[in-house]
Length: 335
Image (cartoon, rainbow, N blue to C red; front, side, top):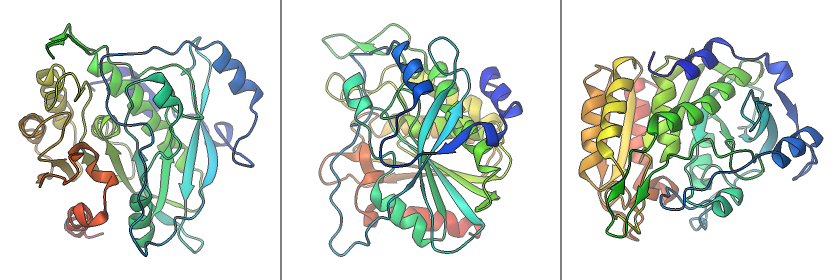
């Protein structure tokens, strides 16, 4: 397997009864987690960023209100600075009824500074929640370690740096990012297995930016019950201020995506806007072409330019810009 540590996580999922508990109220006081955070040191990569931590939300006129999520904690073993566990604060949105329901597991993107990452409140855009609830899916959106109220060390720091001319300096560690972020997906899948409302034979993975990259990495390990995945703008190592339209070391990502493709067997769709300010139009095509050589049923969508210039954030824009692609994907799977 391409990532031994992530593969071990798949084989050694902890008992769900030991790695989750309900939170009461909006913010709870956790003695154990506070101790872990107090001893944690968060690394800051000042020269590379991915997504705004919690971009403004403009609800469409007449849009249904998003229900308040249930808040749970999912333990990620060994994720603290000195090897302890960190509880990932996770939002769960359920449709009406008792279930069991199919599940959409959403992985968020990454902001460039520790301050922005600490402010992450919504790990999934409201319109994405509305879309999936309307399809009868439970939506599960963990806040990964190093972000928001989960806290903990920044295990997803990739080391990408740009000089004043916008040139990539050194060789970033993108494999480490895939391993760290992918573990959150694996832990959440393990937790789902003990939830009576979850149909764990009908799970779809979806991710934005670094979350899309993590989604592709996790799917390469063929987790049980995952039927397909959606990659929105997946990648890492971008900085549109220093290097607009070109990430740091995109060829390394081509190699990694090619590696993931060799062990992926489920259907998938990759959705990138033509004016993605982090990756540009060409690199994502090369990444997908490498991945597609593995032979899975895969589709690449290059969406038209997003009008406000935020092509990278296509998944958090109005559904009319992306819902058709998701409907086509679900139809192709017979879902």
